Structure formats: C-alpha cells, structure tokens
Image (cartoon, rainbow, N blue to C red; front, side):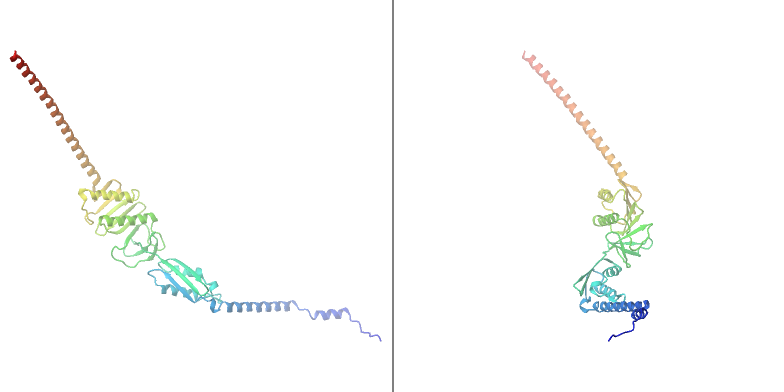
Length: 335
C-alpha cells in the first residue's frame, strides 16, 4: 500500500527555517549579554584575587634620616597606600603597589633629598631616605634673619627658622632673589668661599658673619667683630689668602685683631689696602730705602778697606826704605 504524503512546497520549508534564525537585534543583545557576563566575571576575579590577604603589603620598614622622624614618613606611606586603582585594585596589592607615587610623595617633604623604596616578598615594604645636610644659609640682603638652608652644593632646599649666632655662614647675593629649589651660585665658588671663611677663622681668628657675593667678580667677607675682607675671583682665593698671610706676618700688622680695621682689600693682587692705606707700596719704598742704605754701607766699608790697604803699602815701603838707609850707614861705618 503506497503511502502518499502530500508534497510540501518550497515556500513552507523556507518559512520553517526562518523560524530558527535570530534577527540582527537579537544577535546584538545576545553578544552584549555574553560580553557583560564575561566582564563581570573578570572583574569579580580581579576584585577577589587582588584582595587575597597573603598578597597585601602589611609591614613597613623605614630607615635613614636624622631630623625627620620615621613615624612621619610611615604616615605618608600609609596615606598613599590607602587608595585603589579605578576603585578596583587596592594599592596595597603587592604586585601593583605604587612605587613611583610613593617616592614622589616622600620627596615632596622638605629636607628629603633621596628616597629608595623596595619590596621584600609579598608583604613587606622597605623605605630608605636621606636628608639634606645644611652647610650654610642664604639670606635676604635687607633682612639677614629671613634665610633658606643650603646643602653642600649650594642648593636651597628648605626654609630656615630664625637662627642666632654664626654657627652657619650666611650667604647674601646682590641682584638675585632668595628662592627655594635654586642653586645660589656655581658650586666651585660656593665651596671656595666656605673654605676661605673657615681658613680666616682657623688662622687669624677672623669669624665670618656673612659672605656677600656681589655680581660675578667680588666677594666680601663680613666679620662678626666688625670690618670686612674683600677679594676678587680673578685674583683667586688661594692667592688672596697668601697675600693676607704675608701682610699679617709683617711686624707692622702682627697684631691686627678683628674690629680694628674697616676693611682689608685683596682684590688687586699685590696691591693690598687696609682702610685707605696702600700697604704694599709703602713696604716697597721702605724696602728700597733699606736696600739703598745697605748699598751705601757696603760702599763705605769697601772704601775704608781700600784706604787701609793703601796705607799699609805706604808704610811697608817706608819701612823698606828705612831699612835700606840703615844698612848703608852700617856699611860705611865698617869701612
């Protein structure tokens, strides 16, 4: 028996296949939902993994410094680590902790010179810092109590409190404003000025209150007891010091304490002025006079010796002649 089924038209098959196809809108909704689920899953995984306790920075070691307490630095570090990245990854997560941000934040503190941050394992953070060491003060020209600290290179790193005494040399510049994070002068000039001031104190007991740098050439050392010493960079610090030593070693100025002169001017090489007196020319005149006197004395002595020599010759000749006459007389008598 033949089973005759009615043949289905192509139109019916096409309609049935179309029922299983998704429209473009449905496809977009489906893909969007899938991506959202994946992102949500990824965020959940990141949120959970980055909060695993064994991967969190929990210990902090701070070392270095001398005047800034370690507790202050620790508070600064923990304040930086309190945040998070995109409100998702905590900054205490050991793998992504903000090293550069920590260094920058600590160096913003006054007197901090160098900072090193390192991680040991997954839980311990180490912070080492160095401070600027004040070597001198940079003060306002009109108000010598308004000063900044200078380090060994002449870099102004921090505002200084009101200080008294001469524990630190006070630098003053003309034509240059006092400002933080600035190098006062070139390092060689700064170091030479400090060395010259120290030598004045140790060799002559000239304690320096201020060092005034006037432009690019002259440097004036103001003494605590009054008076000043002026030098020129073109002459040089070493040459100026030796010239000063020579003057103070002379008999006229062996005792010239600070406060007994208005200024000693060493800016012109061998021409040295104390107050308004040109010392070297006077000394040269005296020296020339002494040399002239010595020369005259030598001539007089030479003349005396010459005269004595001639007289000796005359006497000898006379004695010889006398002896001859006596001999002749004796001969005649004999005969």
